[in-house]
Length: 143
Image (cartoon, rainbow, N blue to C red; front, side, top):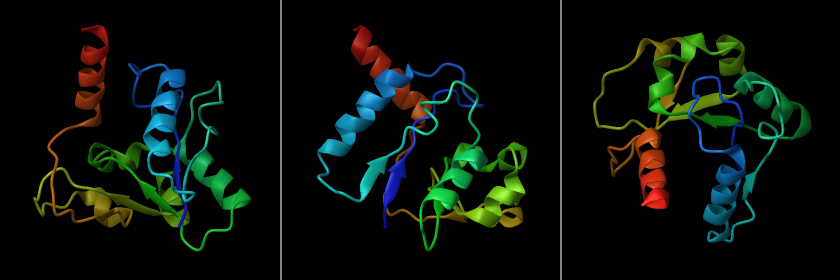
């Protein structure tokens, strides 16, 4: 299965992102060590000057690639507000939505049921958010 990493230039839910050119460079550096032709990245959202919506990106992949199954990995923080995503129901029909929980709680969010969002059980939990990781990177750069 191919895995596409898709950096977003203008994400709807964030307004304090690291510049897109830096995020693309970090992605390139992260992927080069894997030496895996199944890991790819797409600049479909990064090249847009408009706010990008996941439904548009999924439609692009559905229309331009032949996948047996299309999975969308989202953060656990997005599961609780998934009902607010643009075209959430359509998105849930076009791809299988999955997430890694941050802890081993079995508490199910209503959106998991409504949109058939699946949690991927993980044997090792990391209690850190992407925001915390970005802050640590910025601290390393500035100090």
